[in-house]
Length: 330
Image 1 (cartoon, rainbow, N blue to C red):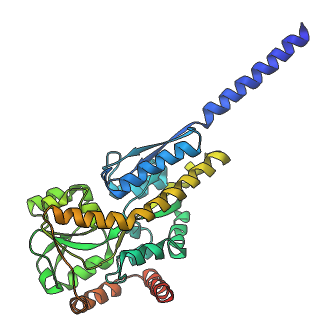
Image 2 (cartoon, rainbow, N blue to C red; image 1 turned 120 degrees about the vertical axis):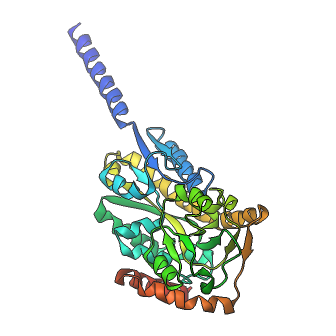
Image 3 (cartoon, one colour; image 1 turned 135 degrees about the vertical axis):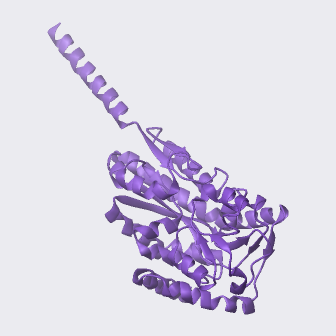
């Protein structure tokens, strides 16, 4: 009887420990972003949540909060660094406030095509930028591509810098783009993406520097009439997590989490060009007029690009040089 009771107690103890461990291993992580779920960022976030659940056997749940439901975009970086949210993917220009090297993505005329930008940031340059976030309590997981940064207007297409004079242009926080607009005689209007529709409707802004892949899902075409396909930067999102959050995961959970992050980033990359083409066509079908500049017209924008580069920090200028060297070697 004594042996039986001792075996029973040992079995009960092991079972209780297993249950306790299983319960402790289950974790729910918050993922905050400002994009509509139909935008590529919204789709990528949902894809990531699905893959994390799959690769951690349901022990890690990623709860996605789209459309700025949980926290304003301007507060996301601070919130993830403090651990108030676990995962974010803000527009890359917001990271310039803590590391000016990110401004390199918004150097006008730096890229000739969206595909060129995708390839460069999928490699060591993108890895370098993400790695620099580690000193801020964040782990860089990937750069999600959005699309080329164009100039959209509530009237006729803006074809030359001279036509920018006196315009009120909404731009995400960006030192080089603000310098470019100032050089053209335009005013920068810096407001969160969730407030742009109303700002355009009320005349607070009359133009936007943005991607067609964001403007479309956000329905900005309802308050915009045209777009100029002059690549003023490359839009995208830095997909990052709080480092301490990742440290709480078991080895198996972390492996599943990182696998999901890598596959989602690849999924985003593979769909980026198709997504750009889709939204450019969709916006055109909904009445937005696209202007495609000639080489001659693009030369007129070179002084504006030079003004933007002069405003870049030394760190951003180094990265711009790396990008140009990478382009030359492709």
